[in-house]
Structure formats: C-alpha cells, structure tokens
Length: 94
Image (cartoon, rainbow, N blue to C red; front, side):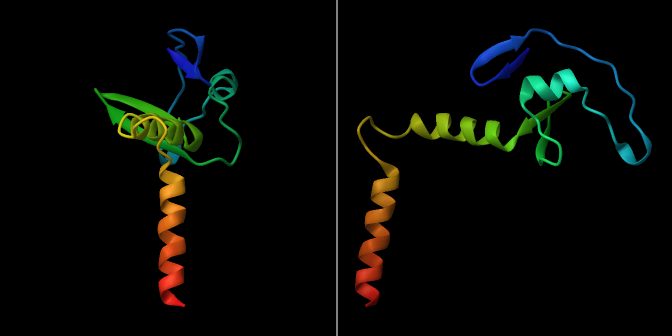
C-alpha cells in the first residue's frame, strides 16, 4: 500500500526494476509522484521484515511527530516550553 499525505493513493502497487551497477535502482515516476519524492531529495532506506522501504524526510518527520504527540498531554506546547527555557538560560547568561 502506498500512503501519501494521510490518504491511500494506491494499494499494493508493485513495479519490477533492475539493480544497476553500484547498487543503483530507479524509482519509477508513478511511485515518486505518489510519495512526492522530488529529484535530488534525500530519502531514508530501511530494511524491515525482509523488505526495503523508502521514506522521504517529510514522512519521517510526520511519523516522529505522531509518535511524540502520544506522549504530550493535550494543551501542552513543547515548543513553548523549549523557548521559555532558552529565554531563561539567556537571561541567566547576561
């Protein structure tokens, strides 16, 4: 299943490709489009359950934010707390 921007775009999309010299593979255009992978963009490769998975930085960030949200009570702003701590540190350093 290919998921992009919290919507299922394609289900069970499978494309065959060859591994070229140096271990290079081509990600077909329809997969790049579905995952919003841009030319020159860095991606993360992960092997899980004997499968190769490709993830954009945007998707990795989205997953981390979702995971972190589970540990932050509603109404609490980690960013505001971080900024407050930095201001307090800066005031002490003056």
